[in-house]
Image (tube, rainbow, N blue to C red):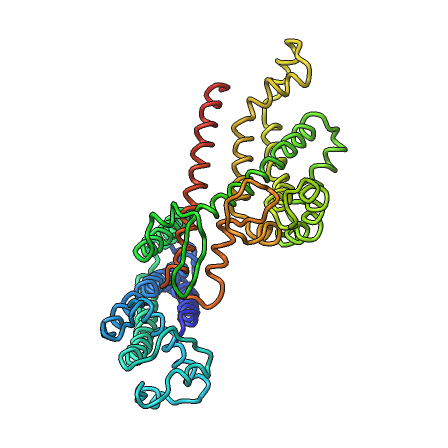
Amino acid sequence: MSAGLVFLIVVLIAFAGFVVGRRRALATAGGDPRKLHSLPGYYGQTVFIFAAAPALLLLVVWMLAQPFYVENRTSGLIDTADIAAGSSRDLVMADVRRISGGIDTLVAIGGQSEADIATMDAQEVDVRKLLAGVGVALGSDVNRSVFEAAKSYRGTTDTMNLIRTVLVIIASLAGAAYAYTRINPEYRARNVSEYAIKLLLIACSSIAILTTVGIVLSLVFETYHFFQLYPAKDFFFSMTWNPQFRGGSDLGILPLLWGTLYVSFIALLFAVPIGLMAAIYTAEYASPLVRSFVKPAIEVLAGIPTIVYGLFALVTVGPLLRDYFAQPLGLGNSSSSVMTAGVVMGIMLIPFVSSLSDDVINAVPQAMRDGSSGLGATHSETVRKVILPAALPGIVGAILLAASRAIGETMIVVLGAGAAAKISANPFEAMTTITVKIVSQLTGDTEFASPETLVAFALGLSLFVVTLGLNIIALVIVRKYREQYE
């Protein structure tokens, strides 16, 4: 039984427990809710909580632990002699999972029975042709131990799923029965329910932190796995990016890092002055009527999908820059370039800088403006010497948000800058970024067992470190100037 169906059964048991618990509370009070410590609904909620919470917690823990148990149990069935030269146990386990999925497909389509699958032998049937018939691609020749491991993998998974289903349903019924038996007029159901709600709120508030921790840990573990297969020195200091899934890959990050920073720099160079000046105008100079029109018009840019920006770069901006700048200056003949992606990305980032800076400028106390005017300063002097310094922390935060958005952009770079991984100072040449190569390395039917696939996690972790460094620098700047103006 699938995990989704088990979840649905638990929810149904919990709802049934709510109804039954509420009725029992009223029955114990003789139908008079005034004799109860809590409202009748609270008694139903306690049954619901005890029926759902332990069972769902068990379901989540089981789903997290089961893959590790099945993998370790099945991996021991593979003989070391059956691992081909140049391969690894992880690659063989990838074939085991594919074969197991193919067995499931064969059973599902009715081409083979459970008994036939159980008695199959890799020496008695052409397993590769059989599984290829249901769309299962294998990375190595199938031998007896691998096929036996696949059958064991499937059998163990089915057994564990059955045990999981039984235990979760038992836990749900047991929890509901426990809460049901405790119902009486003196039972403080409201306290129990409110405490459970408090725990739920704490859990919800922890989701962001736990998600961040989970993302970082997943990146770190997979990156560590990558560096076991590929030298870290070559990854960080090689000037060449040339992945070859058949071997002989050169996976240097420097060309990708250069392209990422170059495109982001041009985008910020375009977006920050325009966005900041637009924010100053709408906040300090524009009339209410003009502001009511200009500010929403600028913010519309933030709602345009990035794929549309990419098409705009490919069809309009790229040819324009090529015909009027690159070719006349002798800098290139391609419409795909860093400048194309940077300009279009800068247009996309204008509302991030403008809207946030406008809100920060408007948040500066009016008393500071009045004091500056009282000392004889002009409006422009007040803006330059009073308002902007006071709003600097928020403006830096807006620029940082725009920089993070630029570093993580993919579609505009794919369509506007191309996919060439190289280091060049010419902004009219095609280059690429880290995010584009992360997508390309994980596109298609891949298994996380080869350096060419695992390198995506190393690239992601490197990008995370770069973004974290920008955040730290921004915090230092903000703290320095905030102390000066407070």
